[in-house]
Image (cartoon, rainbow, N blue to C red; front, side):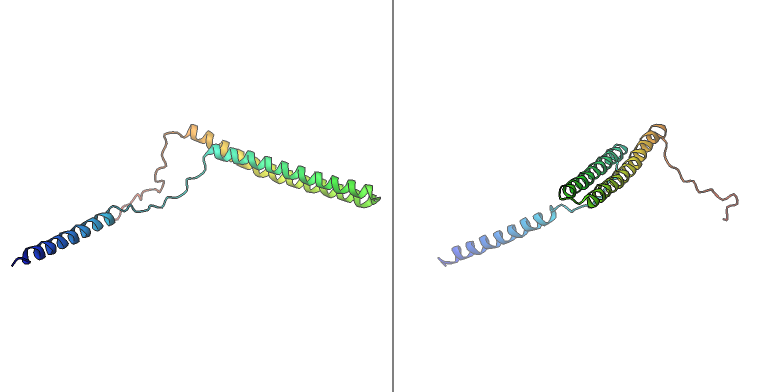
Length: 142
């Protein structure tokens, strides 16, 4: 009987550790936060204006680069005594530059106008909520 007490004590100790471990793991699985998916917010009017200004700047920079490339190639052709190629490269650079500046300006101006219009619209429509505009039937069927 001398050995019965330590064996019983060890068995109870193992049982209590096992139940404690199970309850601790159950608590850990319950506290795991769930991930929520958020939809991206639409761009603000100021964001539209800023993006439009960026597009205008990008178009201008791209056009300037194309003009410089055309002038550089034209100068190289002129030095190597190819005047016809020189004129063609300068003209091509100018044409690409005009296109890039025009596209950038058009995109940017459109975004600036959209952002400005939305900003002004918020001023005048502040506090108004869109309500259901479907007409109610004049003759309800019960």
